[in-house]
Image (cartoon, rainbow, N blue to C red; front, top):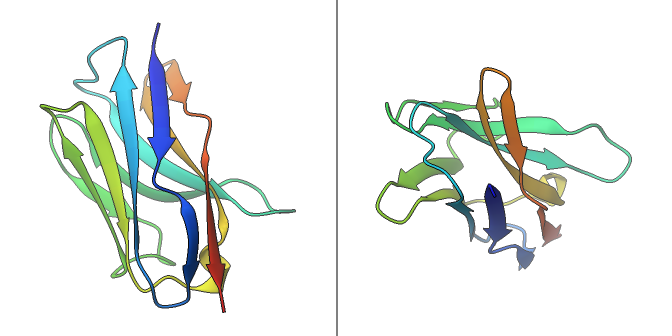
Length: 116
């Protein structure tokens, strides 16, 4: 059974930092693209960052570029999202996603709240 389990969310003041983790299990994700998405109340889910599990290549939404860093630890089967310089508009539920072709897996999400 494939599982993606996010952790590391919480309440932080504007300007602060958090590191989200996405622990994976149930299969190898070689070749997959690992993504972070987020969804704020009343808004659609939006892309935040991506990393190729095998290649390590990364991509970011313009809104987080320069502040967030995505990384993966192959030995721990875990993907991270380091978030610095947090802003109130970063408040959302953050979801981990693994995708390749028709295979599309999601975690349950972790809440990030940034106070002004």
